[in-house]
Amino acid sequence: MNMLAQLDAIGAGSTSSRPATMGQRVFETLRQAIVQLQLRPGNLLSEAEVARQLGVSRQPVREAFIKLAEAGLVEIRPQRGTLVLLISRREVESARFMREAIEVAIARKAALESDGRQLEAVTQTLARQREANEAGDVSAFMRADDAFHRAIASMADCEDAWKLLEGLKVQMDRVRYLSMPLATPVGTLIAQHERIYQAIADNSPDEAEAAMRLHLSEILKSLPHIVETHGDMFTD
Amino acid sequence: MNMLAQLDAIGAGSTSSRPATMGQRVFETLRQAIVQLQLRPGNLLSEAEVARQLGVSRQPVREAFIKLAEAGLVEIRPQRGTLVLLISRREVESARFMREAIEVAIARKAALESDGRQLEAVTQTLARQREANEAGDVSAFMRADDAFHRAIASMADCEDAWKLLEGLKVQMDRVRYLSMPLATPVGTLIAQHERIYQAIADNSPDEAEAAMRLHLSEILKSLPHIVETHGDMFTD
DNA sequence: CGATATCGAGTGGTATGGTAGTATGGTAAA
DNA sequence: TTTACCATACTACCATACCACTCGATATCG
Image (cartoon, rainbow over all chains, first blue to last red; front, side, top):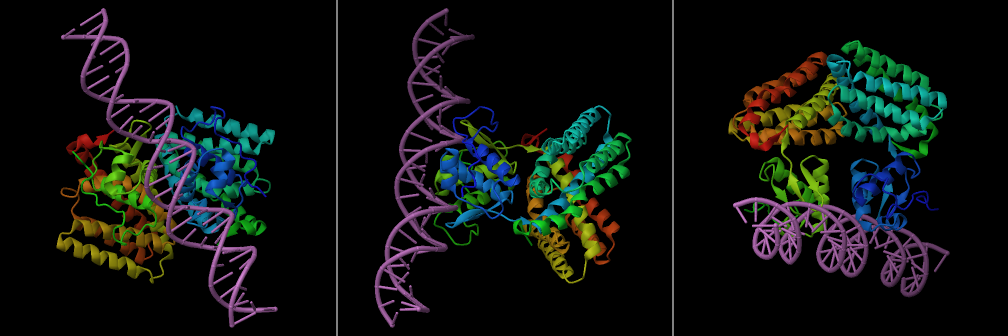
């Protein structure tokens, strides 16, 4: 019955939780739980209930709810309750569209400005991806995947863009978690990454753009099947 | 001494303030004041002080501060104060870069999918721009300008993107207000808009992309001069 | 038996009290 | 005159209390 049982109290706990304020920590905790589908689309939340389970007052929980609503993960219905939003197929596709527009521009910029120095950071993430793949650790791969895209943004001097891209990615990440068993083979994704990397290293902006565009279109292949398989989690 | 004097109380006032909750209304009020430079970069704010002046409690003011911080307009320094951030030249250029990436993609999509029906909404915003220009009403022009870009997004079935673009625009809008007297003549901007419109109406994606890209590069011309003129408001 | 009125538990929104931490200005010592 | 110190007046953060409102269960009436 209690969907938040797996959430640990964060009150006086370890110093490992990085965010300074309780509100940020609650937000991060809930965001993780929603993206990883521990809190499922349609679940009802409540300021008081979450506050009780996390051992904090309602105030920081309220702040977290507001941020989650801005991120498009929950809907706050005044005097009625707050619920985890269904995954909107339209919003997923919209986020993908904007992410493609930005990351393609970044890849092109990186290919134009690549000075070889920051390339090594990218190759490291590629190595981590291969290791995670061989070890069968999907979660580790996803982290390395994020690091790869982030490293490219950094190379193009677009670290500011990453904050925005994270906000867009959230909409797609729940789909990613849903598709973990059955989606595009990880090997294919790594090959796409390597093609992007090579194009940037070769200072070939057109090729970098094409490779990035193809890579970010991948989710469109699996999306219809996932929507069909998990129809109860989707809307639109 | 009091930089918030021009802000009206919003407590029991008119029903015209659209946002439902106080927090949203306070946010909107402060956002306007910051973007229009009534609250100047470097000004110090305080939950209690703002709450007193607006006739609300500190709670909604705090929520507004958090949103403003996410928007990149203020910095919350725990136990020390909240201050209006200087305009970061780097962030302005970064926001411009991302905005160009997205709006260029939207313009291209609009040119490909334009079905003539929604074109009329765009022409209306163009007419409003010309009227505002002849009347010398810069503020009205800026509103019509926003409506123009929004209408194009709507045409491309990208209304979701507008929320994101608004967040990016905020960084550029303070520069816009600074440049109101001396920047690119409004007539030039309208001509650029008309070129974009024509390309979309003609279903010419390449031309639409080029026209939009040129248009969104305009701010880069005036930025150096504005930074030099108002150096005390900028950082980076 | 069915429709309607009522009441109460639960919700988010707001106001307020209390706490730890930080800047500041005056004071006393060197 | 300079420097170390400390009282004070702020700050944002968190907790708590109260409010208006929603909605469903239950009671009441037709």
